[in-house]
Image (cartoon, rainbow, N blue to C red; front, side):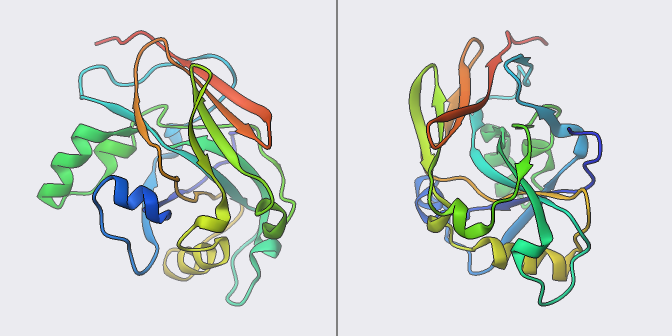
Length: 211
């Protein structure tokens, strides 16, 4: 499922309430960062090892889209995307706070191993169909995030046009499209589960920390 992934693009601050909960300005154009492909792992009920000594690790649940063909200007998102999944953009929040103040890239806070677990990809039903359902993230059985792409600042079309124009898009690229409000810390023993329209799509247990 994850062997052919090439570039991993991510959209920051794409839900207004999420930007506000972290005290960040709402962007006026898509805010793109990247993760190494090595950060991507399957969200398949196994334990997940996260960094132990770098401060709080926050979960950020997101819709993930997979690109099926080379981007061309004017192409509709429904022509370009061939599959979708849901994922968690794990973030070293304390590290991110420091590097933001220094004006450094976000790689240290966003790009560590296992920082991008994703559910199994499914055939893309079209962007309109995705508007009809919410996705949720639960922690230990309690809902902590709920999102719907209709609340994105930048639509899926906006995102693929921006990334395709500035950086390029092709088969095997995936895009984490942004997280709604409700992000928060996770700790060893927590069970995180991604749910789409009431159906569990994947979960993991946070492993005991190792040095």
